[in-house]
Length: 392
Image 1 (cartoon, rainbow, N blue to C red):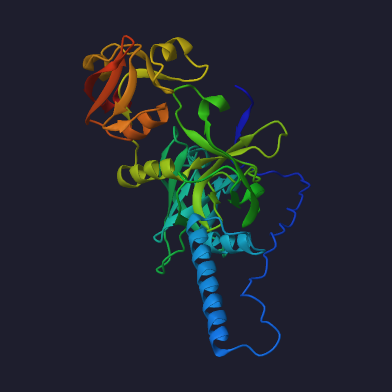
Image 2: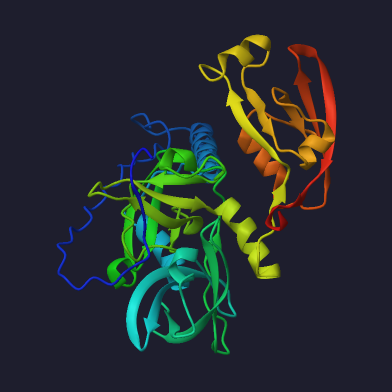
């Protein structure tokens, strides 16, 4: 493990903590619009005035078009209210989750509503320990409290669903789900939740990395999840709360921070992969994962230079490291040393490509194109049917 990673289960702290307020963000200044050339001294002709009007109109239209394109790209400059506007959009759908045991609060976390009927997303480590002697109270942004039960959870993805027991007849406010695939390092993000049980708390920062691998954080190599890294403050009790962009859309689920007094290094589950798990939980109350039976490593640069030398025309790729006996991969004829170049019709350059294509497909026939024996000019096709990993 490169450094200790602490899951934020949200234990209630009883001692006083010194909290530092977030410094105000100063927006960049915006230059005044130039509306056209200065008029010359003396009276201008009607034709001259028409030319000025046409030029001014053309410039205004060009600026408007540029601003529209900038908005579509998401690179409009921040204003003094950018963060406040995003919080205003997202906050009504953010909740506090408190766990009680024998009528005493024992831990807390955060979550967000994804269905107006009262379905809440949070981290599995927030609610997985709930027993028959425990109870859950969900508090909305407006202070309304509801008893709730655990709908389902998946510890491997660290995601869970909580359902309000008796939601109101009116529709509850939900968050807007964005996408994490287009997030770039350096983008502003906002963490919402209830750190230290302080409900409706907001912290802001930037995306520090978009694909921090679980193996870099001390997880087992089989843990393929990649995390969004941010310097936005994520503390005890923030677990399960949303990480949102400046449009107020959820792009991540706050889940952990670096322990040991180190600040500014926290992590969130990317919402794209997270929603795949959440949808499985909503439909089946469990997550089914495919099993192929192979270990993979990537080559390129200084990694696996011997393999890379065999295929100089391929700058990066995925190599089969080992194949499990009796597995779908072995039955398909996949061999250690094979280089995967295509999977289910899509080009493969990283393990992430293979995992994304596999998704949650079980019982599905899938085919790979591989290179073998140093022959870059000749590919082999191997096909297998994925099995249910939980039944091994």
